Image (cartoon, rainbow, N blue to C red):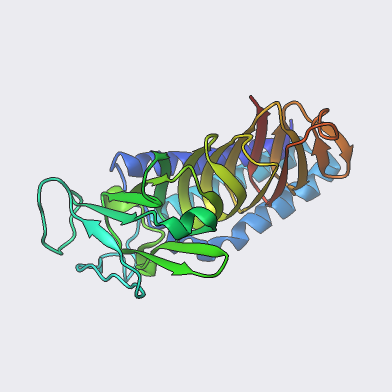
Length: 327
């Protein structure tokens, strides 16, 4: 029995099951309530390592029982409202610099600033001539959010927040060489609360810009299809997350850096691009289809040296699932 894989699989099933139950409003789960118990996972893996060395079937059963008991406790504890769980923000607070920020409520014409699950808030940053000559940096931060790249826009950046339960802001800064957009969740108290619908963000990017995307996600899921976008650098720092990425072959070099806690990471790269993976995966599962191992934690495609376009991927995760495929 590959106990490490079994434990990892049970953990992902637990996280995925909780997220699914939240999405269908079966339960309200407060992630902030269980983070303080993360050392229990270290105990479980310590017991697992000890019993793996002795190849004891009894020891493996004890490890599994301990894991199931721990997850059962966390499942119960996560559904208990914390002191701040009912203190949802009632008014919209937008912080911005001198640059213009446009926003509007949904098509029903609801202009009241009281937040409800039916509201949809839109953000847009227009494309100006100066932006077309600069690299655009997009900083995204938040938690308890489902992010989805929903195609292109003639503006520089568009975003729609659905089932809104927290405040968001969008601001723009301009330097000599960069245009910087900061899109973030303001209400940090609710960043781990997926209950009552959570937050769903659909955003669109301008195809003509060269993008650097820096994302910090406490807990949530993201689906980014960058095949037709010029993404020079993508950086992800996440906790309990599900991340799906697809990259194209529009730039000579692209860098992808993913650091995760307990996460399910899936990345697609073109077959025409040479790709190298540097992985520090710990107890994580990894599946690099179409890659050859050339060193300790280093993998690359057969066309890496001959290709004029390259993608460099760095993966760092303690207990995650990493999958990289070529299409």
